[in-house]
Amino acid sequence: MKVLIYKNPQESIIILSTKLRNFEIKEMERLMILSGVVMLVGLFTSQLRVASAKWEKAHATFYGGSDASGTMGGACGYGDLYTDGYGIKTTALSTALFKDGKSCGGCYQIVCDASQVPQWCLRGTSITVTATNFCPPNFDLPSDNGGWCNPPRPHFDMSQPAFEMIAKYKAGIVPIFYRKVGCKRSGGIRFTINGKDYFELVLISNIGGPGDISKVWIKGSKMKKWETMSRNWGVNWQSLSYLNGQSLSFRVQLSNGKTHTAINVAPSGWSFGQSFISKIQF
Image (cartoon, rainbow, N blue to C red):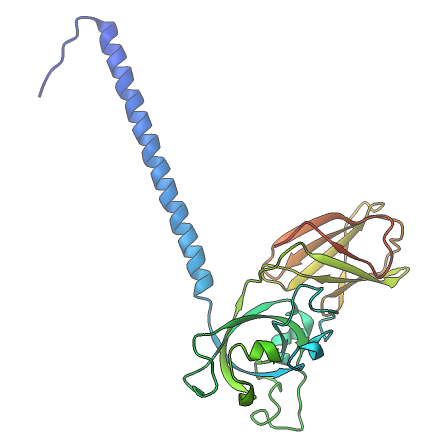
């Protein structure tokens, strides 16, 4: 072991101080590297959880014609599915999945089960569809022969173009695997205000993230507090307040608990029948 003897005490203090600074710098670098590793592990784990969402079994049929024109409107309350941000990649859900409209706007990834019907599936394909309609039960037919949407069966009645992206038209019905996934949207959330005085019926569409709404609040510019809206049907939420002549703000909460607020999305001069696109998105 070498022993260093400094004649000048001040020199020893300077060297000791330098060594301490070097130690502190190395310790900071080590902590930064460790922090980066933790962030990467967290990101990887988060992505893994999304990728490993549980697959469920169901069946799929189709409706609405080759141009999907018959899928417009429906039990969720949407109008023109192109305007509302969903296009032709849509589906109606059976009672077990529809949940009285609570699933409207949610997205599902669907894969045809080629292990059961290899002659009908388009191998290597999948599609993500948005729930925009309800597939009603038909109790006059057995659940395994025509009553495809009878409870408690999970079933997807897809738009014809969407169905033909995973299976052949002639199949009519195919077994599938499905899972709930996040929705990807372009632009902001859309609010369409219908109704009349003392009855605002607001259609909320083009929602990303989980896609399905759990709660909505509204606030006029003359109101002090947020008012909780109630689900009228599908994605139509209602208020029974007189809000004419006020700019309107909306707060939307999705099924995963995340909440975004659109401030003054409708100006004070709004009128019934108008739509407004916000700057918020999940």
